[in-house]
Image 1 (cartoon, one colour):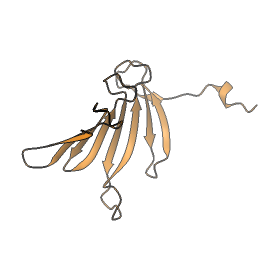
Image 2 (cartoon, rainbow, N blue to C red):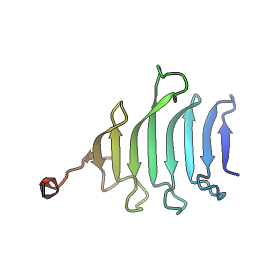
Image 3 (cartoon, rainbow, N blue to C red):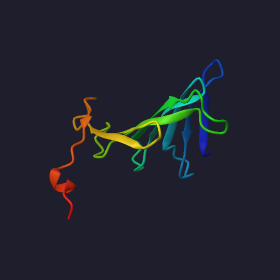
Image 4 (cartoon, rainbow, N blue to C red):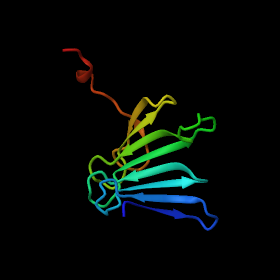
Length: 122
């Protein structure tokens, strides 16, 4: 089985678990509210725990054939600490607007600073 869907008692899509490698292990879960994707989590390193999270917002006026949602941010657990430590915040056009870090994993995000030595042209 490559995926399985779960529905509320009212028949609304609640979540989908997906085996992206088609190996029977579900490594991606998508969560829905009123049948619209609101977030997802991925186990990118195969350890059985999520280490990447994407968040989405509804697109009320989306063109036909395009998703009813747009990505707003992606969070990463870079050190396998069990919580996100770095995140990308996306602009409405999908480009990265800023990068933030939360090294302690306490939901206290701050702008990521690039050392001045990395900014210098060589």
